[in-house]
Length: 288
Ligand code: GLU
Image (cartoon, rainbow, N blue to C red):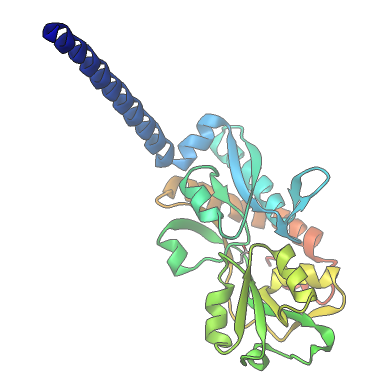
């Protein structure tokens, strides 16, 4: 009896050990594959024949989801398409452009997880972000402003430096950090996306919404009782983002960016998206 029990125990122990070894091997293989995926973005997009771009879905003019088709439209999407065509030409590898909606707060993590290869998403190049991800050369010039009701009497950000004011920002953007410098006494209300921010502004939960002027122009166009007050109080150009240490992909993208700026495609896209925006000197956005 004792002997039979011992044998049974031995069999169970062997099965458990085997299972642990198999699971361990599976985990090691999965990790190795994941690390392999992480290694070289250019190698990955060439191998798979597509570049998955993270683009905004809530940002008028740059990346706004068309609720009927589920596809985002905007300057960023067109830039990503033009870059994909150009990178395909440069590498000799045909690639398609695919798009994944990203939010202001999710895009860094999605790059890290390789859920997206790159991000063209109104993303300001900052030294803090550069510690975690790589940026290309700048592809759009922007600076932070405030959107207020036209009859609010607020003329610029300095007018808002008082605890009687609440400024609405979107989480994950650079807006809050900058406001802490320019209107430290004002209260801040952080929301998940711009649509919610606009609702909060209209319902009086704040007296201003703050982000890049280029983004606010989109909202001012749609909401004629609101306007941008004062000049931009920061300078924060946008870059295209990739995971860190992606030298080859950054090099190809910078080359492609230079080409579309030289061959007129970039200026065509500036005209397409910004020439109808009231109050915006869109010619100043063109590359000369
Ligand atoms: N340019 C700002 C930033 O990079 C706003 C971007 C956004 O709205 O996602 O934080």
